[in-house]
Length: 123
Image (cartoon, rainbow, N blue to C red; front, side, top):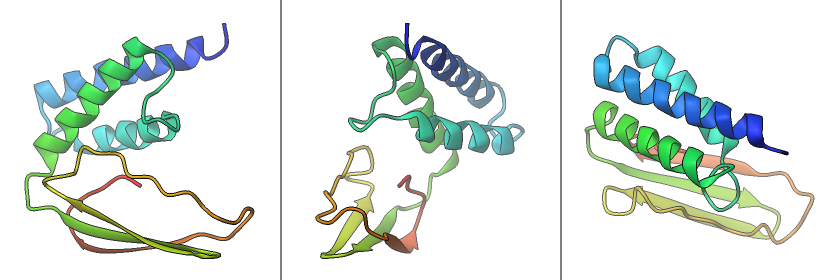
């Protein structure tokens, strides 16, 4: 079954992250950051993962991570620039849980991202 081991890995990582954040967020801050970074590389184009189960667990863990470790104000603008495109993504407290997408008009292309503001956002 393709993706089964990846789904198990995502679900397990989500449970580990939840446990670390519940036990001692500050103590496990570095390990948590590494898990979050890995989890974000596993997401599919629709923002989920491999299955319903791993998606629910991983998104719950990511939401807990964000809510516990980044409690300051959030106002980030990430401008994506590519051939035929310059698109700003604004992330604030009001829209921080929404996935924002843009289609690159020309492929292949070089893409650059410039980020300004205050807070933490996943690109």
